[in-house]
Image (cartoon, rainbow, N blue to C red; front, side):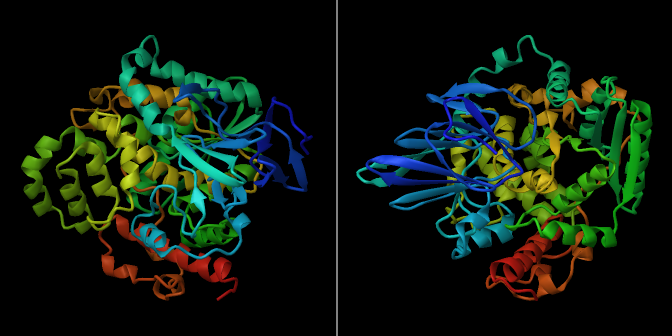
Length: 532
């Protein structure tokens, strides 16, 4: 239990506890209370670092006369409070402001039974991405990655304002890219990020979520240097397909080469549904990403082997130019020339829609919005995201700018968030280290995509060290085959549509099926408060 009142010194709040910050006006001052797990304690003043048990990272930069840090934090003063959300968020921060009070919490259930916002919910179904600062509840706001919210007492009531520091951080990288890259190497930064966490946490055992791909392979390769930790395990979930068997073989080969005890799991519909049932008790708000269930399952497997220190290769794609969208943008002129030929050879409607979006006019950021946000052109609900690209000109940096702070922070983050929820687990995600992210974003386009090869710099530095070659396959489970149909085809949620009409060919089909399922089930079992 923390001791309050607190001083100006830093106080750490462990992420395994729910905190609720409540403030109200009293004599032109804000009175603050922090409800922390087992009681209500009054806070006088100070700074609280919100430790989410992900990475040890001391990055700090002055941006727009505010402090941008690698961790979320709260600053409390007599007449104001500030709340900052970390750029690569794992746990969302929500807030509600009225004339007389403000409530800030990392749990959506704190706010009670609120009306559902149908516009936001429709956006969730269509894209898995909500408009800036929106939740699916009326009046409940979500703090964006890199956003600082200030609440103060003015004229006997509470006023609030916000400053989104992320666009200015991206501008800083754009203007200082040469200096950022100077006298640094990527291998040194990765090794330093890994060692930073190990030195502080001193684990006697660690786990790597090893997919057989490049990113997790790099982490395993670098961890072989840590001779003081002899108990290293790798966990691989594989599907019973040719690609899955190849992934298993590649992960097994690398585990042996780098000194890991390998624990593969054939992930099938039975295990998926068992994992889903276990996970659902921790889902208090619909999540967009079905691989979150798989990630939580793998971490449970690590914990069975007494490993609570987990390494992940998350975020490398978005930073270093992985995926088709970076190649599309790098060679957009050629893509426009051959677009019709590509579309003639592809029967996939969703892929063809993305080709049209990737070759549309405007800047690279606009094209990303067209690719990822399948919504009516006249819709203005996502316009606020354009601020992210307003201070950047480099085209591949614009691709990363969009994906990092929309796709990653609203969809991909749920994997780590759910995997560690309610568990005493520490996650090390080296590519999310802020110095690595800064370095990656500063790289020129030719080191991200070169000669049609994605993640060129990472491949150039590490491919020669990684035995085996993975055949490309989706990390996402085939949820359209495995999910309980009653939550897909029945309209528990008032906005429900039939997702099957979107066709089974496109990669978006499984994601949309999942969003229908999780929204229907959450609504019927947790929002309405009854079991079906």
